[in-house]
Amino acid sequence: MEQPTVITVDQLTKKFGAFTAVNAISFDVKKGEIFGFLGANGAGKTTAIKMLIGISKPTAGKANVAGFDVTTQAEDIKKNIGYMSQKFALYDDLTVKENSAFFGGIYGLSRAKIKEKSNELIRELGLQKVENQLVGALPLGWKQKISFSVALLHNPKVVFLDEPTGGVDPITRRQFWEMIYKAADAGTTIFVTTHYMDEAEYCDRVSIMVNGKIEALDTPQNLKADFKAENMNDVFLKLARG
Amino acid sequence: MKRFVGFVKKEFYHIFRDRRSLFILFGMPIAQILLFGFAITNEINNVNIAIVDHAKDATTTAIIDKISSANYFSIVQIIEREADIPAVFQQGKIKAILNFEKDFSQKLITNQHAQVQIITDATDPNTANTVSNYINAILQQYQKQLNHEVSTPYQITPETRMLYNPELKSVYMFVPGVMTIILMLVSAMMTSISITKEKELGTMEILLVSPLKPFQVIVGKVFPYIFLSIINAIIIVLLSIFIFKMPIQGSLFLLGLESILFIVSALALGILISTISTTQQTAMMISLMGLMLPVILLSGFIFPISSMPLPLQLISHIIPAKWFIIIIKGIMLKGVGLSFVWKETLILVLMTLFFIGLSIKKYKIRLE
Image 1 (cartoon, chains in turn red, purple):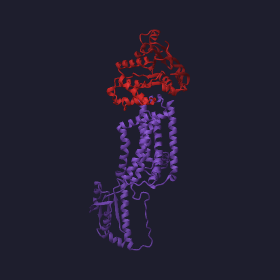
Image 2 (cartoon, one colour):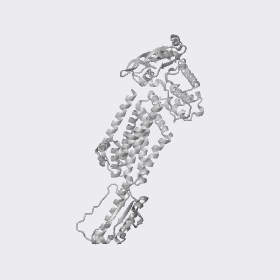
Image 3 (tube, helix red, strand yellow):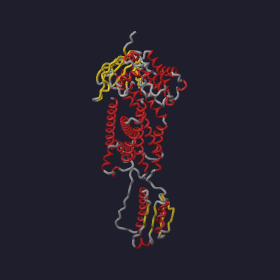
């Protein structure tokens, strides 16, 4: 069964003066898909994401996220997406419960809904013992999982994960990807950037950006076959080196 | 509205869970007011002085009696030889020495002129100055008493009245200044730090991606500090009324409104600082160097503006604190109403609008 399209990007471009950070990129992402958005540092990934989440206006081109236009309906987009950055930004001086209450609150969830959701979060992550502890005292891996759960709190259609696994050990990364799969199975679209090429293999489809352009976009299997590479690392190196 | 309440609640958690910020918020105002009120003072009280009396006659005894009967001085030492004077000062206890010449009474009667030398320890020039003024005043008074019996035809008797602060209490001068410093510190420095903290932690990014508008984020961050600043202003005014018995002559309501105006201008400065700094340290440095130093040095709080060189006088005009100090001194000490400070108030309003406009513009640029 063909899933509906959640993200449509058409010739999206961002220029800063004479410098073109994102050069006419186009792609579609389907509902429930895990879409890997790869590229070297400075390739234009962050700029592209900023346009998709509605905090930066495109210079040219169009993009539609969760049914809304990024140029004209940025506020609607913000209500329908979740976002998690590489800093796992949570408030260290608030408890797990207070954090989820706060983030639920700014997305306009009702008090009852927040309570239900944060209990669910605590139960699923097994955080009952530390629910009233300040987040600052928790290990990095836990913060990462809490941060992801918080980003899902308001049932967004798309979740943008900007290098969500930086600085975390392999076991925790593996567990984290299991959470991602679970969310995707439940119908949430996952848009993820990463520097770990083994993680790229976990994605349904992968795009690789080089100097502002998307140079490759396909399933990991097809990419490896096309570039006659053993793994995604080789694919990436071949592309990024030109 | 519900979102706003949630936001402000979170902000209060931040403030109350951080001991350092709590200390700055509530420890500093109290400590500063008490320090300035009790410790740092221009008044003199029981200053130790010594006497070298070469005459030891009726007049010198009368003068010495007069001096020791005043509360200002206590005579702790009688020095016999002039050669001992340096040694006495070197011990540091004695702040001034009176040196009466030989045959004081006799010279006064025959020559109508006698000399007394006042030697002060000017390693602390302020105290030395004040001490010598006080001693001079006592001597003048004594002279007048003497002249009372003899009639001199023309005599000008100046009668000095110290208006608004008749007892010349230095705490009266410090309260408006300390209040200004505290409000500046709490409003500008604390807000700029708390906003840059969100940037540093990456939570600002999350907030910007959320449905909250940037405007709501800033108002939510700033609101608790308005509230706390007002509480601080109230604490300072209460301390000065009840501990230092400082009368507030003017309207408390007007004082409150002017304080809120100044708080808002300081908050706008704080937001401005947070837009140009990326780390908490930078925000703190800019606040301290760019705001606190000018407030302390150039606002007329400690050094009178009229005696500064012209360039500094001009700079002092662009410091909001200068105008605020003029306003609250007027209200607190002289009891004037808005009709007397409307010019300063208008300047402060315009400055505030300018800072707010500038920080909105800067903030937008950062978002692009």
